[in-house]
Every structure is written in structure tokens, then in C-alpha cells.
Length: 517
Ligand code: XMP
Image (cartoon, rainbow, N blue to C red; front, side):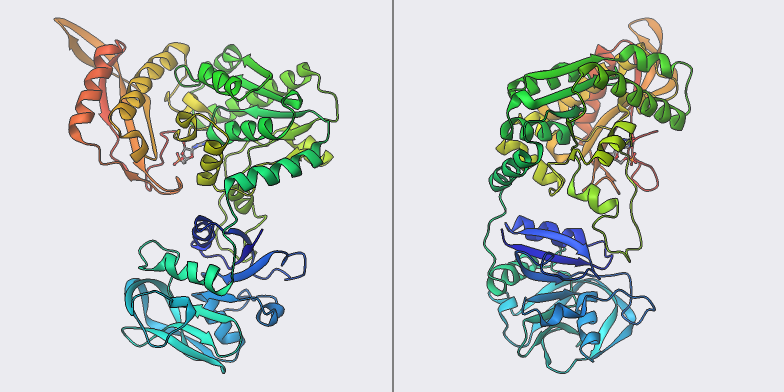
């Protein structure tokens, strides 16, 4: 399958380039910007994109590509730092701008080039650079400039090398997708071969070869990733080899466990083990109210129950452990990211002894590890996973444990479950659910006075949260239509007797986080 290789120099936009190209139907892989470009790395690579960077080309230690890059005969597109790097490496110069160019900037095409086929002769680009090409390297010419005369695009006279100083991958860049498509299809001649059906076919061969006749165990959380991973295993392997383990912590949403079971059954699972561990979790949480301590207690209990239950399954030693790891998890944990990247996010996965043991044994399979989250959803649809599961909002591992603020009890969980269920159902009925990235109710440790009929009532407070986001790293408050908010609030206080007051959280992230604990 044709591939575009993206060399990562640490820009926040690198992932975006990868996703945009995949959306065009071509597989992308991200590699550290200084990776050796050997035959193995270049297998199926039809084009290379050098990404942006927080570095300046003159900084000491600034990342440089393998010197073979420019003479491979493979088309290269340098984006921002990539274009400056190419200029510098070919003997041109780069300088620091007096004023950083940031945001929308008009670009005028001055010469024709296949990169701009079908693109208007002037358009609004998206810029984000503090350095700029000062003098061109020998052999290059400018084919587009910004309104203040700065080179916006450069092309080599005889080699397949191009650079742009703007960011075609950013949605605010007009014709950005056309420019990427021109590179990928017009210049690199890639085939549109990245489809989820193709992924299933390739996963089938790879998984069968890898696991043979050994059993495969997958822990199910109820979220999108583990459900789609289960679907993929069930559709590509003999379902009799697939063992699914679902630990019901008692910290799940209303009817969630039953829904998880029916989803798995509908997918043809034959070995589904549902463990009711509510008592284990709630008794471990008794008297604990510090958020970090609650997370630790829940994480530890997961490990305890997991070990106990896996032993009980008696799968022997040669089974494989499947994980719902995504492409972004690999990149974030440093496997794919540029060695020079300035920021590497940490993420929340619990590192259990079971996972470590299986990793050492080389018996982990990660069938979603080439996919972005939106691709996991697309794969789920191809595999026939119920739309309600596929489009479900993210849910944190510790579940209601971090949404019942302070000490967690079964009664409080039940109250929160009821309020949250009304909230999410109403969001779906009112057509709001899919416009929101994540929405949920939180039970605050605050009781206040109210009246019900003629009687004074001392009820709990529920906070409603709804945010717009693309990856959870930052989030804006969803601008809730007031009428819906008022009606939902009334439904909650009418139908959940323990709740006396409802508030709406109007904090964005940062400074607040999405969850309250
Ligand atoms: P915060 O609250 O950090 O959340 O703004 C960002 C995203 O991460 C989810 N989240 C978690 N997911 N285990 C998880 O699996 C956790 O401990 C956890 N804490 C937060 C949160 O729901 C949001 O989508």
C-alpha cells in the first residue's frame, strides 16, 4: 500500500499533516526527523513531507534529516521548518523575521507548478513562522509569495523538491487540502488505497500469522477502542480463540454493563467473562476522598481483580494479550515522535504487571496501533459495531469514581447515574450529542436547601459539563441553548429526588480540566 512518510521535527501540526493525508485516502507514517532513510523505512514510500518545528535551522542541535533524503528521487515537500531546512541544506540562507508571521496571510502564485494545479491565483494561507527563507539555495525558484514579498513556496528546477512556508494542513488555509492532494496524487502518484476495509483485510492476515491457534485475551472497558478491538479480533480470528474480560467496577454509567454485554454478543463473542467487582471497588474506596488517592485505589484494584480473574480463566501460558493501543498512544509514548520534540504528553494507561509480563514474553497484539481515533470509529462502522457505541463520548478509566466528588458510595453513584442518564438521553433526543465532544454530569459534595411542594428539601448539587474539543488537550465550553439547559435541569430535579440543584460548568480548559477530579 502506497505511503507518505512524514518526518517529524516536533511541530504541533505534524499529526495534523498525517491525518489530512489519510483523509485523502493515503496511508501515512510519522518518523523522527533524523531517522535513517534505509530501504526498510522507505518500503512503499511514494513521497516524504518534512514537518514544521519549534527549532530554528541555526539552533545548536537543530534536527537534520538523513543526508540521503534529497537524492532519493522520491518527491519531498518541506512544510515551514522543512522548507527552511531544505534551503539551508542546499546552501541558501534563513533569517529571523522582525515580526513573526502568524495567522491568515494572502499568498499570490507567481509561476505555475503542479503543487498548485487548480488552485486560485491568490488565496488566504495559514502561517506560523518566526524564521523565513532569506536567500534561495542554488537550483530553487520561488513560485508563490506572501503580500509582503516573503517566499511562500519554492521549487527545485530539476529535482522533485518543494517547500512551502505556510501550513496547508491547517483548516484555515484556503486550498490546503487541494495542495496536499496535488502533492500526494499529482506529484507522488499515490493510489487512494487507505480504507478501513483494506485495514481489516491486512489485519486478518497479520493477526492470523501472529497468533496461530493460541487464545487471545482482551480486556474490555466499554469504551470505543476496546469494543472495536474486540470486533476486529472476532471478525478476523476464529471467535473461539477470543476471550473477552469485562470488569464491572460499579463505577460505570447507567445500564452500561448490560449494553457492553449485548454489544459483544451481537458481534459474535462466545467467551465473554463479566466480573462483578462493585463490592471490591466500593469497599476499597470507602473513606477515601482525595482525588489522586481515589485514582490510585481504583488503579490498584483494577490490577488485583485483573490478576485474579485472568488466573481464573486458566488460559495457560501461551495466550496473547490484545490491547486497544492507538497510533497516537505510540507517538505520545515516544516511539514515533521526533527525538527533538519539545513536548511529549503523558497519558493515563495503567501499566499492569500482566501487561509487562506479556510484553516481555512478546505476546502483546495491538490491532489498532496504526489508527487515529476517528479511524477507529470508521473501522467500528465497517465491522458493524452499533453506532451508539462508535460515537460515544470518551469516559475516563476511573469512571464515576472521579465524577462523584469526595467520598464515593453506591447511593451517590446511583444518584449520579440517574442524573447523567437523563442528561445524555436528552442530548441525543435533542440532536446535541454529536455536536459535543464530551458531556457528563458530576455529583458535587454540596447539599443545599430547596422546596418540593410545601416541604423543604436538602438535596445534592449536580453540575453538567459539555465541551467542544478536538483531542481533549484543550476544550471550550459548549454554548448550550439556554432553553435545553433549563428543561434538562427541571427533568433532573423532578425525576431524581436526591438532587435539589443543577448548575452548568462554564469553565474552559485551560485553566480548568474537563473532569472535575
Ligand atoms: P482532563 O480532565 O485531564 O481530561 O481535562 C482530558 C480527557 O481525558 C479523560 N480522562 C481520563 N481518561 N483515565 C482515562 O482513561 C483517567 O484517569 C482520565 N482522566 C481524564 C477525560 O475524560 C477527558 O476526555
